[in-house]
Amino acid sequence: MHHEGGARRRVRAWPAEPQREGADVRRGCAHAPLPALRSRGAASAARRGPELQGNRKRLGHASLSPAGATRSRPSCLGARHGVLRTRVHSAEDPRPRRRAGPRCAAGSHRRGIAGERDRPARHAAGVMELAWVLAALGAIALSGLAVLVLRGRRQNNQLEKLLLASDNKLEQLQRQFERFVPADVVERLTNSADAFAPERRQVTMLFADLRGFTALCDRFDPAVTVSILNDYFRHMTAAITRHHGHVTEFVGDGLLALFGALEPNPWQARDAVLAALDMRRELARYNATLRGKGMPELRFGIGIHGGEVVAGVIGTAGLSKFSVTGDPINVASRVEGLTSKHEVDLLITEDIRLALDDEFHLRPMPPAMVKGKVEPILTYYVEGPSQPLTAR
Image (cartoon, rainbow, N blue to C red; front, side):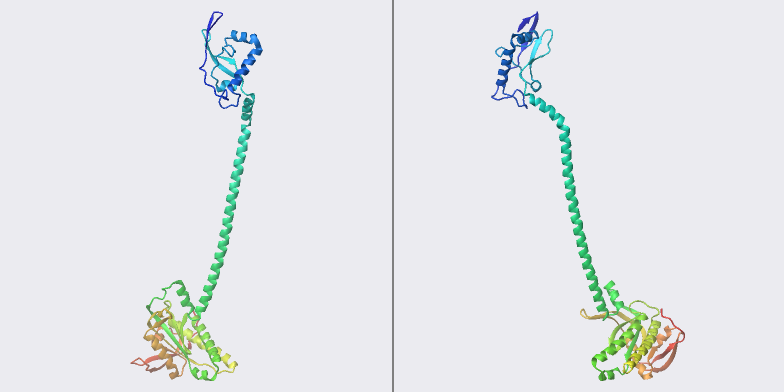
């Protein structure tokens, strides 16, 4: 406690803290150890002399004497600006005073200011680094997406090639299948497996058979015989197909064609007669070809009859075909046999005549008994159309 100029002043010192060897004045800064700072402060006070001591006393600060001075507790703020705080109380001015003390390393303050100045630059550099990282990640993602797209295109191309090859194989199989089954039947079977569920239908049957062809087989080589027969069937099938019929089977040198079996056809009787007349013309053209090759001409007989039959796929799992069964089939076959008896090439039954209009020249034939019937049947010879006809 000091008395000067009538003023009462009291200096309260902070409790001294135990100092460790190498401890700094403030936390977080790199400074000299506390004993070194004390010795440095004492040496500075000794050099400056009594003038400094007097000034300190007049200002009300504690002495810098290392023996009598009581140092305050260092704080980060005081250490940063190179001063140590001392609590000084007086009656007139109770505010705390500052006294000079050992300064912290000056470089730390300069580094702090420089760090504050460099903060925008460091922030900009960090933003640029983040932008580069994001750009690199985006490039990697785009490259991966491009790889996936290219791989997908290659897979699509491979699938297209496989599908095209499969379509070609299916088309070849269908063409081969059509050699043994009518094209209309193949198409319907392709669209629906149960398209030919067994059912009763009104169908017109056409039987055609070559006359005297068995004797020709003994005169010619088998290859020639088969060639003649195949060409004949090709001409006949073309005529039948043009008039909405289809050939369901070949039996020796004969064939069976159906009209209205695949789908309902109210003009099936007319279509069958038109097909028979077209077959007559086709045979005449084919005979002209045979004559040019020095071969004998062919003759056929055609019988047409209609009625209700059962239509569907008939056979086993290993071998089956679309066909019809019923008594009208037998009658059509018997009518074809009557062509030889009446010496004509085309006969129809009474049922077919009733289904036709007056557009054909018909000549009635004598009633005849046929196998399987207890009464004779009426037949009509078709001479030709009574007027120019056009196919549907």
